[in-house]
Length: 318
Image (cartoon, rainbow, N blue to C red; front, side, top):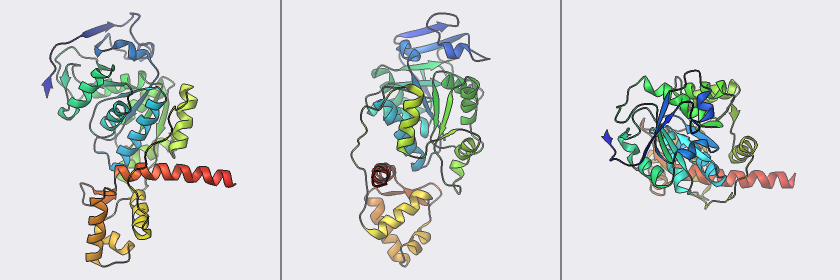
């Protein structure tokens, strides 16, 4: 944990013209906001992108997709700057030339977690803002994060959850959004994935299901009244080999262990090791902390592109 050097800072008092209206509507609205960067971006239409801190490549790719669509629709992305889905969404919107707002559970001049240092610097450099409910120099405290989650929800017309298990801190953000009449969007995941139990539960309770790229674009258009300006993206990692494709599609559905991959590919243990090595080297799959293998972020983005095009063709033929 480190502190930023001095720069332009703002303190926005509750009741002032600069104080965001939807934060004012919170039952526990803070008396003041501490802001670095451009405070005017807090009044712009925004989508919050949040989720698991220990996100899988799937959760990361979902968060990146949401951020990319938001950036190309001219919508600000709000996050908590945390590991996993938050940082993935924040970095992606900045990579796309968009604007990011980070709401921290510590002072706005304190870097936490340390891995967010580059994200926070780029947020300021690209015209965004860093927001805190606590005075300058305040170190992170566990109880401060649920409070900041409510501010994330209030700054955003909708909250997108890329991946979340049970229990999950993202639920406090979702609850605050619903309290304010804002919409909750969630990416469904495998029923066998512990990391998707939370998002699947939210969908079962009425959250908008983001089933694919098109449904995300439709939701963004409906909520924000704007269209995505650029709907194309260079294809990511993919394969034309039928065995590799079968394995990749299975891993997109759910991560697997090496022996299961070998059986799926109808090969022996050595053949499975060679297949996995080839897919890893080419960036198609990656190993998860628990030892299983899953589709990489690049492969998931490629699948999104191909699946979207295939769906369009099916509709035209029908």
